[in-house]
Image 1 (tube, rainbow, N blue to C red):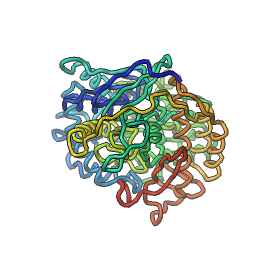
Image 2 (image 1 turned 120 degrees about the horizontal axis):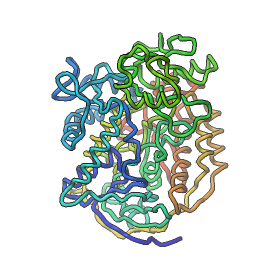
Image 3 (image 1 turned 180 degrees about the horizontal axis):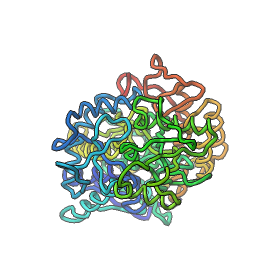
Image 4 (image 1 turned 90 degrees about the vertical axis):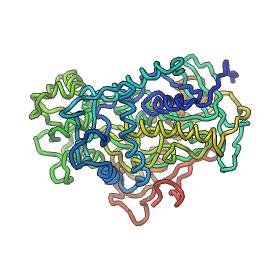
Length: 548
């Protein structure tokens, strides 16, 4: 294996340049830490820029009368299927107003409304509390503002190393070393550039902010970059993960025809928040009688109802009727353009939609400050399981989580580097690119789509696991594609293992062979760990976040 061609160093390396990564890096820089951001693509290529709906937050200086952080917490817990950590939910949402204020101070511009910012309502919310930008282009504005802030840091721009995939977390001395808190320590990351050239970034701490694993599925709202790299890195480094079986399928993704693959255009939930309704081809309401909130029910409820209606009618999609809405093109320009691109005019005809893989509720198990089970390794944003989402994410809580948890993780790093948990530097372990198990991406995506989408059963999950096992081989990670394939393969097996273990239906995990929720025995998160190359699944214990 080729030795690394170069080596760099920092106090902190942040892997990922979306909302969580840039929030962490900017906060760390302001706290005086030498910080480097590493991303496998260009700095704006991740999931953040595709987020349409907005940021759910109860603003100090402008919110719907009667709304409160307490109500936002209640809505989040109601959507979470009993597995969110109430303390984490309260802490993260309470930090929301300050995080959004700081983002606005960094230059983000949100849509104005009477007396302040315009507020939207989305599924599962009991009030209008979602701020948005560009109508339905909030993520793009957040990404723009954070990248601009990174370029404006003094005395020079925040360094961002693009086109470098993080392929391994390097432990001190090349083996699992333990500090007094009984956690292993990290010494940096190994990266591979677009030409397959390896390099080492030494760091006293690593924050993973790489997003989710939506590319496990053939049809998704996620960009090609969402291959779960950070979660796979954490598992291989010895950090536990949790709630991996809870993959949220967005109910309204533009249906572009049979066999559509890859990223598909999202039809933001805010369209239903403004009065659009779901109907089938015969014009019958899909959500009537399904939930008290009908079309504004939580996403897992709406996606499951659509899936049942499609199965009952043999249709490939349902329709979102927004023809009664005024000013659709101005309010939802992104959705309008996508619909027009397939020949649909939302002003005069319903929009064809179907569910697609959207958001991963689980990830690296962290505390409310982003600390993982490995000293020196932190995680924030969609890659992490902070306790906010539980079994199903409430709409528009994701950008808020990235803003809040990125800042919290940076502060935890600063405290741990300076305080009693000070992370000592040590010799870097074996810096050679690893050899990992990987299956072909197409095999993984096709298998997960038929075996682990909405409506799973034990036989299908077991068959999917066997199919991926059969297609897996050892491959040297010398380029981005191989590293991504290895990450997707490991995460597919982890998701299948967790989904097979949870013999109930809860949140966005729907088992057709176990349709009921088993609160008596299974109201706990499942932890997935990788030990000596084997995945193990266990319930959380009473000391871990999310334990009942």
